[in-house]
Image (tube, rainbow, N blue to C red; front, side):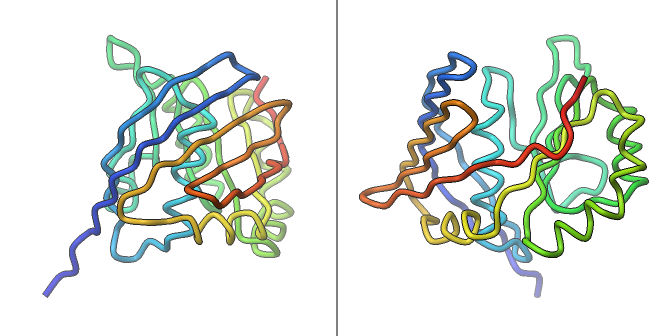
Length: 181
């Protein structure tokens, strides 16, 4: 018997002072059976960091040829491809060929550092690729905020992120490993 996804209802309020974006998104997010709460929360953080009117969650883990989050133009072109984790060089190359801009959010502490050492040189040729590492301590604390029904407030200013739910606050300092041109 196949395991079913767990549905999370999320009210995500984004106040991004860096991009002057202020909006509340009501999201229904399916957590794949193999997905951890840490990964789910990283996905929500990545959504907040790139939030826009046309940004959408995709099928994610259940499909190999889609990112976790994307933004398409009105005519269907992929404007933004947002992936999580530690993708291989082939996946990075294919993603950069499909979208105007690709953002990879790596996390996982030492594993993310080793991955970056391995792919750093291969990624230098992609001008449309940005790679951001999320500190292990912060992503671990984000997992503790996960709840089947949650209201998250994300404040972004000067590259610093504050995520709050109820009376709990997590501070995240994303580290830009590679910036898109």
